[in-house]
Image (cartoon, rainbow over the protein chains, first blue to last red):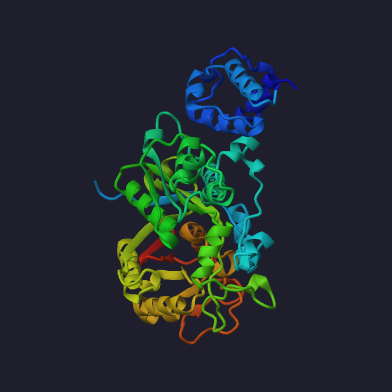
Amino acid sequence: MDTLARIRELAAKEFAINPEGLDPKAPLDALGIDSLSFIEFMFKVEEEFGVAVSDEDLKAIRTLADLERHVAAALTAAGKA
Amino acid sequence: MAARRVAVTGAGLVSPLGASLEEFHRSLAAGRSGIRRLAPELERSGVQVGATVDWNPTVLFKEAEAANLDRVSQFALYAAAQALAASGLQVTDLNRDRVGVSWGTGMGGAHALEAAYKQVYGAGEWRVRPLTVVMSMSNAAGSNVALRHGLRGPFANYSTACSSSAMALGEAMRAVAAGRADAMIAGGSEALLTPGVLAAWQALRTLAPADRADPAASCKPFDKRRAGLVLGEGSAAFVLEDESRARARGARIYALLTGYGNSCDAVHMSRPDRDGQMRAMREALAEADLPPDAIGYINAHGTATAVGDVVEAEAINAVFGPAAREVRVSSTKSLHGHLLGGSGALEFAAALLALERGVLPPTGFLDEPDPACALRHVAREAERIAPPRAVMSNSFAFGGSNVVLVAARA
């Protein structure tokens, strides 16, 4: 399964949303994901992919597509992609 | 304004003796014990028995939702939802500013806290779940109740060890009586049967070992053979409401909460004091405007410690005088264990049932009453009497807090 699909699946489970309905370009708060839920979700993403997302990177992540890009980049850098 | 009378219009619970008021009543009436040997990983702490809740979070929560709520909050939400549903109180934008929450817990989210410590001290891993603070904070349970039901009235969280939820009930009663709220969800919860917490309790040398013949009989309040307390977990919640509003909407009124005594021993951090207990009982009776002989049943604190049971028996005798020969007393901790911060609320449920139905729950396993605990015990089996005029529930805590509640027929 590709990275975006895995992230989408995790988000669907965490926020109880239908994965089909998850628009990767929609702002996260439009998906009903508040700041606290977001950092908790990021923790689970980091655990799932074995990556770390810095506070700076966190600020730049506005959509699931942004998140996928960061995770993919982190995986490549760690030689895991 | 003159103090308003406060009615109990809803009750809900989840406990080692069942997950509803009716199931709890049946278990108490049958003298059934929810005390069992603990799982092996918990017994490594040295603690052998406890009263656990047979809990499946999916009864109320989706998986991801449950993962973000500590067990103590899950129990609270379950009990509170049940109580609200039972009351039939409709909370809408027209009244939600007038409905508050008053909650009691000794430790808050112990499981979440211990999971974080396990990461840091166990795994040397400095990453912990971001939700750790909001899951483990002492007010998490009560705040989650308010959040779930949109309750914007006064909020308070009480943490006074074994008297926490009795205090939550008493203070909620005050808030409604003073007109600061028209209704309050009041109760308590506790879920701290975790390895670290059990190790701490074991170190106090006050917990009962497993009874050799029958682990379910390990907690024996007032008995010569008593060997200490047994920890439990769970939650109980009530809807307390201004009586006139309750009657106006045709609510079922279980009882009136008419007396609340609150004192502090100021003598010792763990050893109880007769004088403090007497003052709390007298205050509750005075507020309820009842003589001691109006009380038909006392749900005792009765933790089954060597000293505690004697002190409480002496205090009851001193306050009740000749009436102590008549008033029935039992400690239901023998059956459901000591819920610590949740005990006041769960035991108030037991007292409420006794008031409503006249079925007095027993002190389980009381085969050899200690003569130093001279009380009219309800021993081993439930006793059926004409429903009493009023009942009393005692909660005497570590730190010296004493809370006594009196409930009377509506």
